[in-house]
Image (cartoon, rainbow, N blue to C red; front, side, top):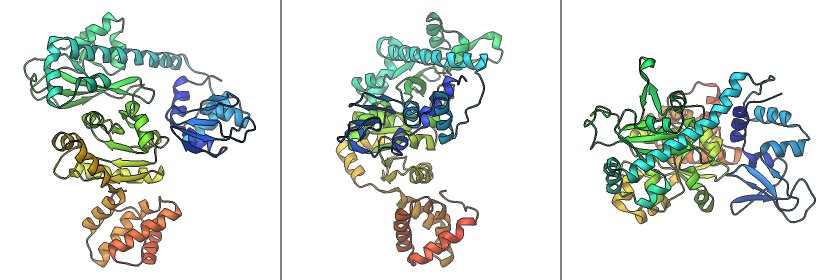
Length: 449
C-alpha cells in the first residue's frame, strides 16, 4: 500500500525518537546526543546514539542508523507499511488502508514546490533590503532598533516593496504560477479572480520563518510607519504585523521561530527561553541569548512541546508583562507538565517585552533577570489566589481550580506541589489532597486550565 509523503513526514515529526528508543535502550545524555548500548550488536561500551534535534539514530560500532521507521523495522521485525501504521497509532494519526489518489500524489508533489517558492521569496525580500534604494528605509529602521548587519544576515531579514505586485513579478520570472504563489500564502486573489492577484506583504520588514528542517515555510511582516500612507499599496491604518496564512507546509502550531538557530545553544545550556515575538528572538540572539525561540502568533501547543522536549526539559516562559502575557504563561503550564518539562518565568517589570528590556538595560541585566527566574507554578498559584480570595471558601475554590493541573504531575512531583499549595494557603496537606481528589469529577471552574 502506498502512503502519502505528507502523512509519513507528519508522523516522523511527531514521534519523540528519544522516548521511542528508550523503550528498548537505556540512554544517557552525552554532549548533543543520547548514548546507550546498541540493540543491534553486542557491545560493552555505548556506541549507539540518538541525535534529538535531527530525530535520527546511529551506531558507531555496527553502522546501523536511520529514523523512527528504521528503528521500529529493525527492532520489531516489521515492514515499512506496518511501521508507519504502528507509529501513526502512537501519535494519533490514522494511516488509511488505500492507495494514494491522483489528487494526493499531486498534493505531495506540490508540497516540494511550495518550499522552493518560499525560498525564492526569502531571497527576493533579503535582496530588496540589502541592495535596493527602496529598501534603505527598512534597513535604517532595523539599525535604529539596534539590529546589526550580521544579525540581519543570520536571520535573512528582508523587505517587501510597497507595491501590489513586487514579489509576484519576481516569482513569475522564476517560473512560478500565481496559483502556486497563492498556495504558498504569498499572494491573494482579487475579488474577481479574473483580475489576478496581489502581494500579501507590501511595505514591510520581512522575517522568514523556517520549519524544524531549516526550510523556509512562512513569513512575518512588520509595517514601516515611515512609508505607510505614502503608497496606495500600504494604507495609513495598515495592521502593524501580518503573518503568513497556514498552508500545506506551514502550521503555526507546529513551528517555533528561531529553533534552527537556537538548537545548539539549547542543548549546550540545557534550557530554552520561549518568547512571543520575532524581534524578541532576534534581539536576544544578538545579545548572546541564542537559546530563545518564539511561537508564531499563536498560543503554545502540544506540538511545540514535542519540538522542545528532545532538546531540553527546562523552559523559561518569557511572555510579555501585560495581562495577555500572564494569561499566555498561565495557559502554557499544563502543557509543560504533561510533557515532563520543568518551567520557569521571569518578571520584566515595567518593560513590555524582552526586546525592550535588552535595548534599555543591556545583556548583563537580562542575564541577572533570567537567573532570578521562579517556577511558573508560582504565577499560576498567585493568580488563582488573587481571583478566589483568602476566605475558607476561596481557598477551597483555589484548590479546585488548580486540581486539574496538580493531577497532571507524576506522584512524586504531585506530593511536592500539594505541599506548596498547602503552605501558600495555610491549610494541611491532607486537606489539599482530599480537595484535589474530590474535584476530579467536578466541571472545571474558570482558571488556568
